[in-house]
Image (tube, rainbow, N blue to C red):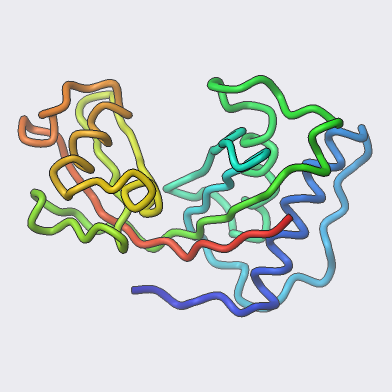
Length: 182
């Protein structure tokens, strides 16, 4: 498992993510809340999920971060709101209804099959050739997946056949610290 975030760090990340989205919607420069709490200079994967009326409205993240968490959070939040190809861009009229969920990831650990998947704890990442897919830990819980079904679903998410996880694909599990706010 990985080092847990403090309440102050979580609040700062939520404020920074929401501020980035608001700034884009209001066409104002995003001002990062200062100062950033200690400990956010680490490079950690992060996903931002946006919900409107309990329906997913956008979810984008980075597994292999290229910058510190305190910088990456704004980029990922903007991408979740405006660049998720499954949804139209977030509209200003939706801003007050948006609930945000942030998932800060541990380092991925390579695994080899369903016996190593812990539903309720692990998220999954699959890669085969140029294809890759990721499902956060909460997805398996929400949909009541078994470990095998979780592997099938992450294969499908990558655009692969359901059994690709048995056919030469590489698999990783990771944990996520999930928190959110309105």
